Length: 292
Image 1 (cartoon, rainbow, N blue to C red):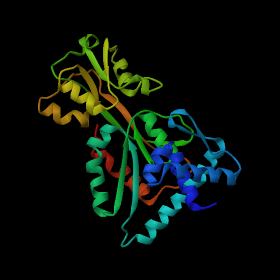
Image 2: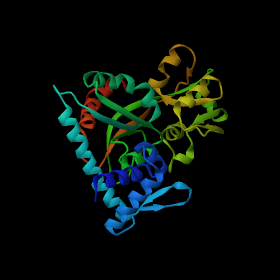
Image 3: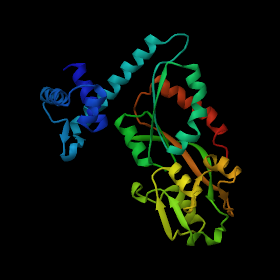
Image 4: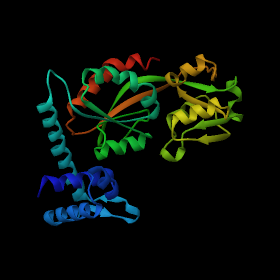
């Protein structure tokens, strides 16, 4: 069994795709398939279940091998970081999976001092729904996830980071009492097993949207609201500038709308030095950008 074989299996398992892994590894897909097949012959069992449509599922034995691969290649990344480090400077990749509003409005300023102190550090950011972020963590594609939906997955370790204020906004002035007859712009309900945080907040105000436009990206939701397609509910840090400039008007509510923000890591996984640094920075500095 060669390290190269494990490395190629690792990428296919993480990406759930031979074609995507072949592109990332810059190898021929046919050769990649043969390498994984040879590894399966050596271990005496099926590691990956090739399904129709190119989707790859991991077998129980494959999950065990994947867990070992995560530790092996995590240690290799650490060795590379240690041997190339000088004067406390870190190298390697900081791999995050986060909600799009955080990527657009919080991360640029939050990450600036880290990247300035460690210029050789590379950054990989995935944005998506809470369920997609959890999959990134479980597959090992990301080390740290950040989202608003509480999670119950026993394989993940969540920690509440902060309370985030949300604002009801629209292009024109609206009264809270009349919102049930207005069009609501929200996330796709199909992406969530239960009502997502914004819907929960609307329900707490006794608002039942009569008509809904759905988008799985909050920047799109904001743009639709600015163009007058309806009202939406956004983190206040995301809408603050547009409210100040008159592009959006805030709908006043009787109570402050708050949602907890969580970050999570995979349980029993040794974090890289960049991930450890980011978590420490996140705990210390995020309050400056997420003030309620």
